[in-house]
Image (cartoon, rainbow, N blue to C red; front, top):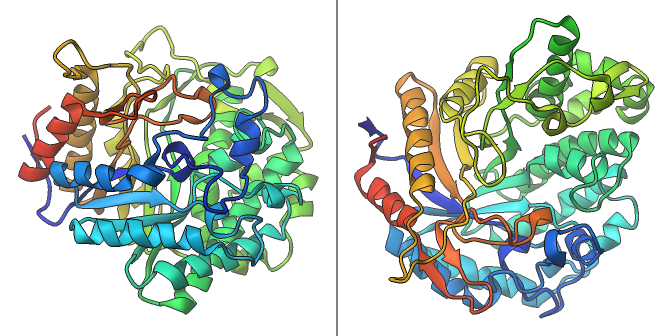
Length: 460
């Protein structure tokens, strides 16, 4: 049995484009995900977020579900184009009114609102000007974040600036499997730098509104397991670790990026990272949000999996390169991701060791995709998700017991939802959603999570 501290924050998480729907209502403008999902071949089955979970109209029902589970906090994201449809300074007051209603309803239910300023739905009008690859986005984003803090900061005290900037930049601007679907190395490196600058700039802007706001960034991280002594492979893994795990944390804590990756990017890096940026990057967070789903397994590097950048051979997509060696074949989720619960505890231990000045850590996403539906009795028996949840929480609890300052856990996700380029094929929710009728059904994993929240203890 693993016990969690009495003041530990138990929450659930969602993202605006994945659940809200109402894409063309109340003045909302088009985002890059509206454009991307409407482009043939970009999303499985041609799915879009036009309706999603209809949370825009059904948020009161979803809050009641959270209240019934005993959830203490709800991490949601704000749709930029609901507030500023074209990404400029022209406000849409109906968008502000929606989030005011949502926040007030959460507080009335005794649930702390935790807001993410940016969870991937960039206004299309800004992408048309270069998006995250255009350095102008830094000040534009800071102004948007400040407007969020001004409007909602009297009730929302905990904020995340950007969710998973690695996915924003590398999946969106280099690999092309996420919006805006670009495939350009220079754009990706620029976006990576500009998201780091934007976090720091937004943090300062929001603190000017209210210095007592608690502000962090959420990064997706993985432990890279290597079954090789090949020097080229080990060098490649070091670069991928620098790209994914260290880029943003080193930037906000130290004001600089890992030397190995700066060298790998060569003249591209020198052109994008300008003199004085080291000071602009510094913005040590009040906490670090970590999204963790699995460890990554890397076999010997292969030339066909890499691109020749100006700095040398550089692997650009760790998921493409990921191969589980024959000596270790764990089970996988419906995403094809290996189930490695010990990795969660190992990862937070590493973060606390390598960046000890970060005050504390929050697991802002952790969950598993399984296609379990209601049986003839209307019960969703998702035993695999329960097993995943328990084992990861045990690993996390053990790390806390060793002194790692982890203060909260947000299960991903509250609802089955629009899972980006996978459409509605992958279900991460604690709550099953029938996307034709919008009926919500609590899965057994939701009831298990309710027990864990109430007791503060987990049995693997």
